[in-house]
Image (cartoon, rainbow over all chains, first blue to last red; front, side, top):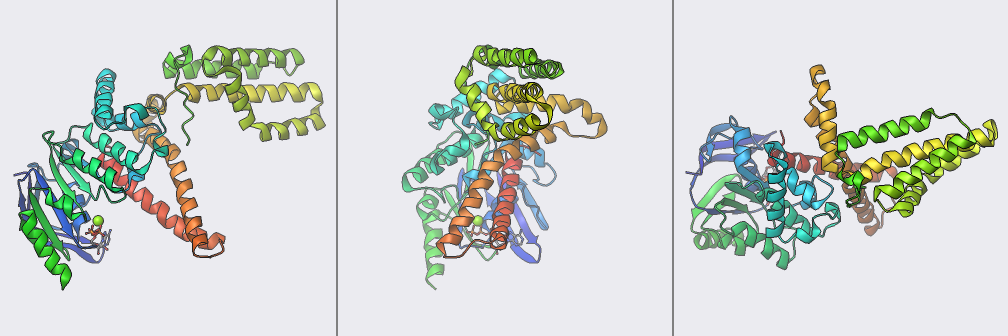
Length: 227
Length: 199
Ligand SMILES: Nc1ncnc2c1ncn2[C@@H]1O[C@H](COP(=O)(O)OP(=O)(O)OP(=O)(O)O)[C@@H](O)[C@H]1O
Ligand SMILES: [Mg+2]
């Protein structure tokens, strides 16, 4: 079981942001959909170990994100919407290498992994460019590259295509869906992307309204939106 | 962008950052110990120019560029010293200060930020006995450097948004929304750092 929640609630300040969420997700690709404010990002941050549950039981890749946070973080990667906030180092190659800092690898290995990752994301020609001078699409590819260079078992992406044009959104999505042996949890408002996943989870007002085959879940979502 | 690094493969580029920093520091120290005399000024200027020409960073072009960056502080110090100390001291002092600045710049010009980060981390390690987390301190420095251009852009966005709505920019109407976007950025950056394996 890769992601397992049992009656999990999250309270942030005065708000009950997630209420009594129970889920068993074993699919390789999972879409998380729902209206603004329904708790999708909080769910993503919860399983990514950035938000702590208030009550309930939770395991991700067999680990409790609160108690085994460091170990879990080595095995997962998170991607967010805003590429600017994900870039840390001044040049493209350095930023990708930054993801490997905590691993204390030999510099030869770092260089090899970085150049392989840059190559895969089509960033080799930009390796020495200042990272903040890239276009939005290139920046998001860089963020993805920084996530994948760590060879994560689970990638959690919160609206990774929100700021992108159609072409770049497609490229980013293709990379996320490419089967490199990782699992994917994809929070998105793009229903076409949601449909590409094996399973969809629909959130409404902090609760799980439905889980299942994406076309059925999307139909349910449409119905909710209509009333 | 606050990355001053110029890609290249001169001997300064290839030199490990620790010894390079030490060498440049020794050079700067040597220069500042010379007396305030015409010959010292000439020697300093010649030596500095030679280092630039031989460092493989673009020779005269880079040197003049670096000097241009500090032209206003130079102008002010020259003017005040001419007034109080006379030409020989004024020129010698100014040459000394400029040489120190452009030589220090060489470290940044020829060293990648990640190598600087490693160097700072190693340099601060002895301080760990006093309770300083060297890894954190080095990271803080780097993140500060790379965040400045982002903040500058956010400030531009806030100003544009206000102009677009026909508002006149005042310090107060600027400060509040700017703080909000800056803090939001800090929040997101914190998440991203955590997500990328930094405690
Ligand atoms: N730190 C916080 N403190 C208090 N309330 C919060 C906090 N973070 C989020 N919330 C609230 O929790 C609710 C769910 O937020 P969340 O960001 O998870 O929604 P979302 O589904 O991702 O929305 P969107 O589609 O707009 O990204 C919102 O009502 C939000 O205001
Ligand atoms: Mg969200």
